[in-house]
Image (cartoon, rainbow, N blue to C red; front, side, top):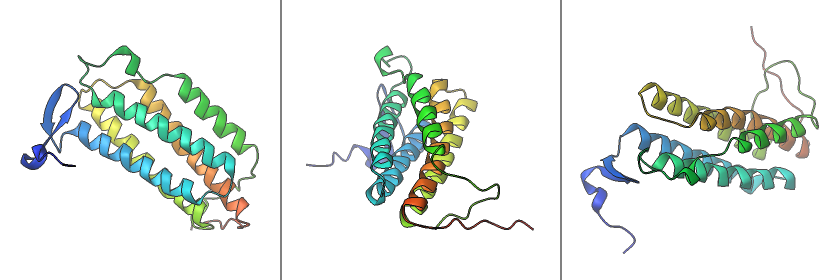
Length: 179
């Protein structure tokens, strides 16, 4: 069978403990899964091969992050620690993409192209997941600080990738008027 029924009582497994499905760590894992799904949707629409390839790498990184967070801290092998070099890669990738587009000084309204809008949704979902990881830290859970750095950089990458996709779709950016 595809299902076990073990979660019918409202619990699930972390690697090393059985916890309630509303446990903050389970909530974070769900939020990160949602980020990966939103990125997958955006990737399926991407017009630029470079964006698509980068998003695959990000999805793989998110799975590594989820694997690290799924372990209880006393059982997590050191090999599951998310590496700081991935944060550096993400920053370099963001800078490289940013050099290819000109951004206006005003706020940009999402929705100029389907792939750009999907990336903007992925960005906002990422920011929510980042806030949930911060809440986990504030609740006293041990979280690799590299994960927070990665999620912070990821929202920047997704913003820039959305602008690259808007340009690839031939869309002119609409600027938000702030009164």
